[in-house]
Image (cartoon, rainbow, N blue to C red; front, top):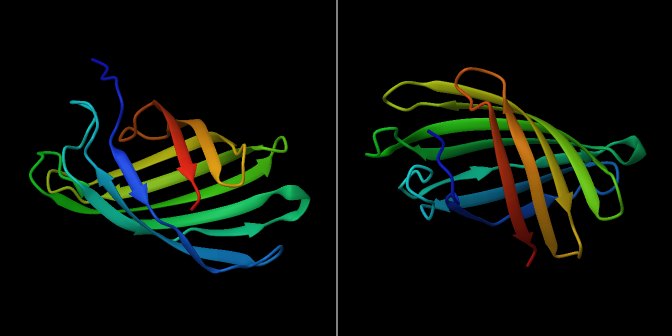
Length: 162
C-alpha cells in the first residue's frame, strides 16, 4: 500500500554566526520544530524538534561544499513518545543557470527508537530555483541506499528569507 498526501510542516530559523566570505567557511545554527499537519499514514502524529549546524565553503569554478550535522527528537514507532536521532548530510552544489542550483547529496541518519535502532542512508538530487533574493523553491528526490531507507522519495519545499 502506498500512502499519499502532504507531510508534516517544519518551521525553522537560521542564523549565520561565522561568515567565511568568498573563500572561507561559513557556519550557522538552525533550530527547528516539526508540527504534525500531515495526512494519516504520512504524519508522525507528534511535534518534534532539533538543531542543525550547517557549514559551507565555496570551491573553485562556482562549486560549493556543505556539511550539516543534526541532532533531533523523532517520534517513536509506537506513537507514544520520542527518541534521539542524529544525522549528517554532505552536499556538492553548483549553479546551473542564474537562478537555478543543482545539488548532489549523501545522507546518513541513526535513530534510537526503543522498538529498534535504524540507520538510513540515501543519495539525493535537488534543484533549487531562487527567483528573488528572498524566495527559494526546491524539488528533488532521495534514493535509498540500504534496507532501512525507502527506495525513493520525492520532495518539494518553499523557503522565505526574512
